Length: 70
Image (cartoon, rainbow, N blue to C red; front, side, top):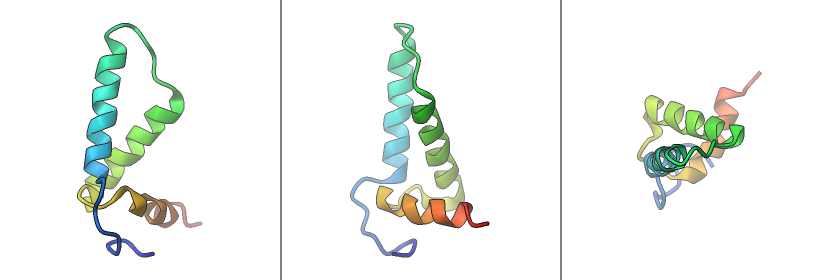
């Protein structure tokens, strides 16, 4: 699969918004988010910043390969 070949079902932007809301709700009662969720949120923001916000979440696998090439 290459970036752009997957129809959008649940976008990167929607996932980022869901995590943003989770953090907002979790912080109010003093619950801390796991490092994994925080890093996931960073990756979603980075992917959206390079133009993948409207792309399907499945395309993050390809994005990860692209940014982690040696």
